[in-house]
Image (cartoon, rainbow, N blue to C red; front, side):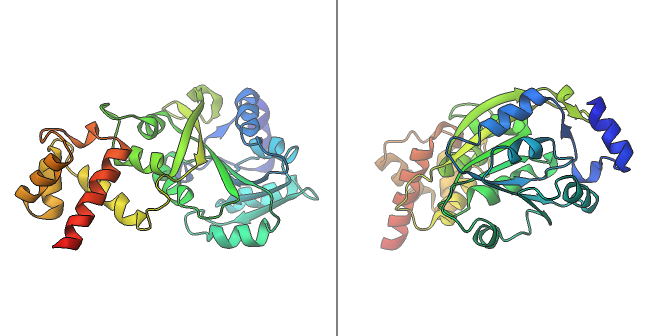
Length: 282
């Protein structure tokens, strides 16, 4: 941590709270994150928000090719100079505005697998995850993300738990999720107010026959719109008919007093298809 502090002072750099900058400094966790991205040989890496390049240095030693996306212009210039003449491209852009499919086509034009690594700024965690999990490129196999511990708990939450919500269902619909490690707040500079967790998302979209996935995800959101309501009341709001909602649930053998947090991903899928079929018949 002292070394990184000195380096920042030498280069005239400061962490910017507005950009959610908390740089990981502990080599143990840096190695752990990087190693988890290389299950396959000749992996290409997209690193989002490299900061001072703590992860970048370790990734370069293993990656077939590395592309970094950094929104901070000062850090972009610093990284470009620091890793000059190495197999690295630094792109100055906001990841939320970037066309990732175009980036993969231009930068990773070979047939090697692609992994994505990021220490996500807390304030844009959900938008980044939504964008990354919807990537269609079949070469993108794994996404390793460090995020606020509380968000990670929601992502991994199972039915019948308080943390389980529509975001849990969304993430589990698009991927299989593995917890790599908890990371205490004292391993960052500056130290955030909360602890973090590293998760690996293995892209494995469930129900490949589902062509209207956006509609399905929206259905799940609506079912969680009012968590304290029963699935009967939430479903009645979707089909605009409480009697019809009751008939659907009874047909599928669901208790009417269940709440959305009691339903699994597969339950939502079954319920969605039944509602869709009924709407076609009306």
